[in-house]
Image (cartoon, rainbow, N blue to C red; front, side):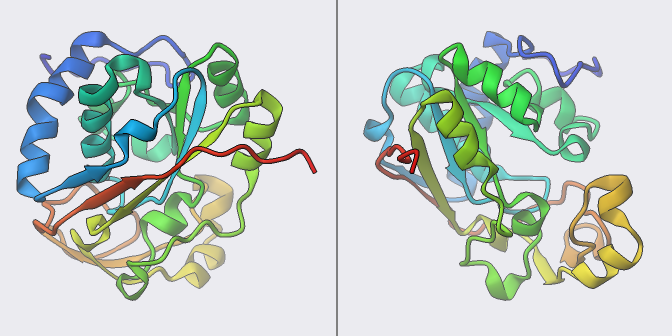
Length: 237
Protein backbone atom coordinates (compact mmCIF):
# COMPACT_ATOMS: atom_id res chain seq x y z
CA UNK A 1 0.00 0.00 0.00
CA UNK A 2 1.42 3.38 -0.96
CA UNK A 3 0.08 6.16 1.22
CA UNK A 4 -1.07 9.24 -0.68
CA UNK A 5 -3.09 12.26 0.32
CA UNK A 6 -6.19 11.29 -1.60
CA UNK A 7 -9.37 12.41 0.13
CA UNK A 8 -12.43 10.17 0.18
CA UNK A 9 -16.15 10.68 0.52
CA UNK A 10 -16.69 9.20 4.00
CA UNK A 11 -20.31 8.35 3.22
CA UNK A 12 -19.41 6.09 0.30
CA UNK A 13 -19.65 2.40 1.13
CA UNK A 14 -17.28 1.15 -1.56
CA UNK A 15 -14.01 2.80 -0.49
CA UNK A 16 -12.52 -0.39 0.95
CA UNK A 17 -9.41 -1.44 -0.95
CA UNK A 18 -8.07 -5.01 -0.87
CA UNK A 19 -4.48 -3.76 -1.17
CA UNK A 20 -4.95 -1.57 1.93
CA UNK A 21 -6.41 -4.52 3.83
CA UNK A 22 -3.46 -6.71 2.84
CA UNK A 23 -1.02 -3.97 3.92
CA UNK A 24 -2.55 -3.81 7.40
CA UNK A 25 -2.61 -7.60 7.69
CA UNK A 26 0.96 -8.08 6.50
CA UNK A 27 2.76 -4.93 7.66
CA UNK A 28 1.06 -2.66 10.19
CA UNK A 29 -0.80 -5.36 12.12
CA UNK A 30 2.24 -7.51 12.94
CA UNK A 31 4.29 -4.44 13.94
CA UNK A 32 1.57 -3.31 16.34
CA UNK A 33 1.11 -6.84 17.67
CA UNK A 34 4.80 -7.07 18.57
CA UNK A 35 5.03 -3.52 19.92
CA UNK A 36 2.05 -4.01 22.24
CA UNK A 37 2.69 -7.71 22.96
CA UNK A 38 -0.90 -8.12 21.81
CA UNK A 39 -3.11 -11.18 22.10
CA UNK A 40 -6.46 -11.69 20.36
CA UNK A 41 -8.74 -14.47 21.59
CA UNK A 42 -11.98 -15.85 20.20
CA UNK A 43 -11.53 -15.42 16.43
CA UNK A 44 -13.16 -18.83 15.98
CA UNK A 45 -16.42 -17.39 17.37
CA UNK A 46 -17.00 -15.10 14.38
CA UNK A 47 -19.98 -16.39 12.32
CA UNK A 48 -20.38 -16.05 8.55
CA UNK A 49 -22.69 -13.39 7.11
CA UNK A 50 -23.75 -9.98 8.36
CA UNK A 51 -23.00 -9.10 11.98
CA UNK A 52 -22.39 -6.09 14.22
CA UNK A 53 -19.13 -5.99 16.17
CA UNK A 54 -19.62 -3.82 19.29
CA UNK A 55 -16.44 -2.76 21.06
CA UNK A 56 -15.07 -0.49 23.73
CA UNK A 57 -13.13 2.51 22.39
CA UNK A 58 -9.58 3.28 23.57
CA UNK A 59 -6.56 5.52 23.10
CA UNK A 60 -8.20 8.63 21.67
CA UNK A 61 -8.11 8.81 17.88
CA UNK A 62 -5.17 6.40 17.63
CA UNK A 63 -7.00 3.10 18.46
CA UNK A 64 -4.12 0.63 17.92
CA UNK A 65 -6.36 -2.15 19.23
CA UNK A 66 -8.63 -1.67 16.21
CA UNK A 67 -5.79 -2.44 13.78
CA UNK A 68 -4.67 -5.43 15.87
CA UNK A 69 -8.26 -6.72 15.88
CA UNK A 70 -8.59 -6.30 12.09
CA UNK A 71 -5.35 -8.16 11.46
CA UNK A 72 -6.50 -11.09 13.62
CA UNK A 73 -9.81 -11.30 11.72
CA UNK A 74 -8.04 -11.23 8.36
CA UNK A 75 -5.64 -13.99 9.34
CA UNK A 76 -8.42 -16.18 10.75
CA UNK A 77 -11.16 -15.66 8.15
CA UNK A 78 -9.98 -13.43 5.32
CA UNK A 79 -11.56 -10.17 4.21
CA UNK A 80 -15.13 -11.51 4.62
CA UNK A 81 -14.87 -11.22 8.42
CA UNK A 82 -13.39 -7.73 8.39
CA UNK A 83 -15.89 -4.99 9.21
CA UNK A 84 -16.65 -1.59 7.84
CA UNK A 85 -16.09 0.75 10.79
CA UNK A 86 -18.58 3.46 11.66
CA UNK A 87 -16.29 6.30 12.76
CA UNK A 88 -16.59 9.79 14.22
CA UNK A 89 -16.33 12.31 11.40
CA UNK A 90 -13.51 14.22 13.14
CA UNK A 91 -11.37 11.14 13.75
CA UNK A 92 -11.64 9.58 10.30
CA UNK A 93 -11.00 12.96 8.65
CA UNK A 94 -7.60 13.54 10.29
CA UNK A 95 -4.82 13.70 7.67
CA UNK A 96 -2.85 10.44 7.34
CA UNK A 97 -5.32 8.58 9.58
CA UNK A 98 -7.98 9.34 6.96
CA UNK A 99 -5.81 7.88 4.19
CA UNK A 100 -5.29 4.71 6.25
CA UNK A 101 -8.70 3.93 7.75
CA UNK A 102 -11.05 4.88 4.90
CA UNK A 103 -9.48 2.42 2.42
CA UNK A 104 -9.88 -0.19 5.18
CA UNK A 105 -13.63 0.43 5.17
CA UNK A 106 -14.23 3.28 7.63
CA UNK A 107 -17.34 5.37 6.93
CA UNK A 108 -19.09 8.20 8.72
CA UNK A 109 -21.05 6.89 11.70
CA UNK A 110 -24.77 6.97 10.90
CA UNK A 111 -27.69 4.58 11.17
CA UNK A 112 -28.25 4.85 7.44
CA UNK A 113 -24.71 3.77 6.56
CA UNK A 114 -24.76 0.96 9.09
CA UNK A 115 -28.13 -0.33 7.95
CA UNK A 116 -27.15 -0.39 4.27
CA UNK A 117 -23.97 -2.34 5.01
CA UNK A 118 -25.67 -4.89 7.25
CA UNK A 119 -28.56 -5.41 4.84
CA UNK A 120 -26.13 -6.45 2.12
CA UNK A 121 -24.52 -9.04 4.42
CA UNK A 122 -21.45 -7.07 5.50
CA UNK A 123 -19.95 -6.93 8.96
CA UNK A 124 -19.89 -3.55 10.73
CA UNK A 125 -17.84 -2.31 13.70
CA UNK A 126 -19.24 0.27 16.11
CA UNK A 127 -17.86 1.90 19.25
CA UNK A 128 -21.04 3.14 20.96
CA UNK A 129 -19.13 5.11 23.60
CA UNK A 130 -17.53 7.38 21.00
CA UNK A 131 -15.36 10.13 22.46
CA UNK A 132 -16.75 9.52 25.97
CA UNK A 133 -15.19 6.05 25.91
CA UNK A 134 -12.07 6.84 23.86
CA UNK A 135 -11.20 9.79 26.13
CA UNK A 136 -12.40 8.50 29.48
CA UNK A 137 -10.12 9.38 32.43
CA UNK A 138 -7.18 7.09 33.12
CA UNK A 139 -8.71 6.09 36.44
CA UNK A 140 -11.56 4.54 34.42
CA UNK A 141 -9.30 2.78 31.90
CA UNK A 142 -10.67 -0.64 32.85
CA UNK A 143 -14.30 0.40 32.38
CA UNK A 144 -16.56 0.41 29.33
CA UNK A 145 -18.27 3.80 28.98
CA UNK A 146 -21.16 3.78 26.49
CA UNK A 147 -22.78 6.91 27.94
CA UNK A 148 -26.25 5.37 27.79
CA UNK A 149 -26.13 4.93 24.01
CA UNK A 150 -28.32 2.10 22.73
CA UNK A 151 -28.56 2.88 19.02
CA UNK A 152 -26.50 -0.19 18.16
CA UNK A 153 -29.26 -2.37 19.63
CA UNK A 154 -31.87 -0.75 17.40
CA UNK A 155 -29.56 -1.17 14.41
CA UNK A 156 -29.14 -4.90 15.11
CA UNK A 157 -32.90 -5.34 15.61
CA UNK A 158 -33.82 -3.57 12.38
CA UNK A 159 -31.40 -5.62 10.31
CA UNK A 160 -31.77 -8.95 12.15
CA UNK A 161 -28.03 -9.49 12.63
CA UNK A 162 -26.19 -10.84 15.66
CA UNK A 163 -24.08 -8.64 17.91
CA UNK A 164 -20.49 -9.76 18.48
CA UNK A 165 -19.01 -8.11 21.61
CA UNK A 166 -15.31 -7.23 21.32
CA UNK A 167 -13.54 -6.24 24.53
CA UNK A 168 -10.05 -4.70 24.58
CA UNK A 169 -7.93 -4.13 27.68
CA UNK A 170 -4.66 -2.24 27.93
CA UNK A 171 -4.99 0.04 24.92
CA UNK A 172 -6.23 2.96 27.01
CA UNK A 173 -2.87 3.14 28.79
CA UNK A 174 -1.02 4.42 25.70
CA UNK A 175 -1.46 7.96 27.06
CA UNK A 176 -2.87 9.60 30.19
CA UNK A 177 -6.28 11.26 30.36
CA UNK A 178 -6.21 13.39 33.50
CA UNK A 179 -9.92 14.23 33.22
CA UNK A 180 -12.51 14.30 30.46
CA UNK A 181 -13.84 17.74 31.52
CA UNK A 182 -17.31 17.08 30.14
CA UNK A 183 -18.51 20.19 31.96
CA UNK A 184 -16.15 22.26 29.82
CA UNK A 185 -17.39 20.59 26.62
CA UNK A 186 -20.93 21.53 27.63
CA UNK A 187 -19.89 25.09 28.51
CA UNK A 188 -18.29 25.75 25.10
CA UNK A 189 -21.06 23.94 23.19
CA UNK A 190 -18.67 21.35 21.74
CA UNK A 191 -21.47 18.85 21.11
CA UNK A 192 -23.36 21.41 19.05
CA UNK A 193 -20.55 22.36 16.67
CA UNK A 194 -18.25 19.31 16.84
CA UNK A 195 -20.25 16.41 18.30
CA UNK A 196 -17.86 16.24 21.26
CA UNK A 197 -19.25 15.19 24.63
CA UNK A 198 -15.92 15.71 26.39
CA UNK A 199 -13.02 18.20 26.21
CA UNK A 200 -10.20 16.25 27.86
CA UNK A 201 -7.03 17.26 29.60
CA UNK A 202 -4.39 14.73 28.51
CA UNK A 203 -0.70 13.96 28.88
CA UNK A 204 0.94 12.24 25.93
CA UNK A 205 4.10 11.85 23.83
CA UNK A 206 5.06 14.14 22.08
CA UNK A 207 2.31 16.68 22.82
CA UNK A 208 2.75 16.86 26.59
CA UNK A 209 -0.12 18.49 28.45
CA UNK A 210 -2.99 19.09 26.02
CA UNK A 211 -6.48 20.51 26.41
CA UNK A 212 -9.07 19.40 23.86
CA UNK A 213 -9.20 16.66 21.21
CA UNK A 214 -5.88 14.87 21.05
CA UNK A 215 -3.99 14.40 17.79
CA UNK A 216 -2.45 10.96 17.12
CA UNK A 217 0.32 10.45 19.65
CA UNK A 218 3.31 8.16 20.18
CA UNK A 219 1.78 5.36 22.25
CA UNK A 220 3.33 3.89 25.36
CA UNK A 221 3.97 0.16 24.68
CA UNK A 222 1.34 -1.20 27.05
CA UNK A 223 0.21 -4.82 26.67
CA UNK A 224 -3.10 -5.17 24.76
CA UNK A 225 -5.49 -8.08 25.19
CA UNK A 226 -8.58 -8.41 22.97
CA UNK A 227 -11.38 -10.95 23.41
CA UNK A 228 -14.08 -11.67 20.82
CA UNK A 229 -17.09 -12.96 22.73
CA UNK A 230 -19.95 -15.24 21.64
CA UNK A 231 -22.40 -13.65 19.16
CA UNK A 232 -25.97 -13.13 20.35
CA UNK A 233 -29.30 -11.79 19.13
CA UNK A 234 -31.45 -9.28 21.02
CA UNK A 235 -35.06 -10.39 21.24
CA UNK A 236 -37.47 -7.78 19.88
CA UNK A 237 -39.19 -7.60 23.26
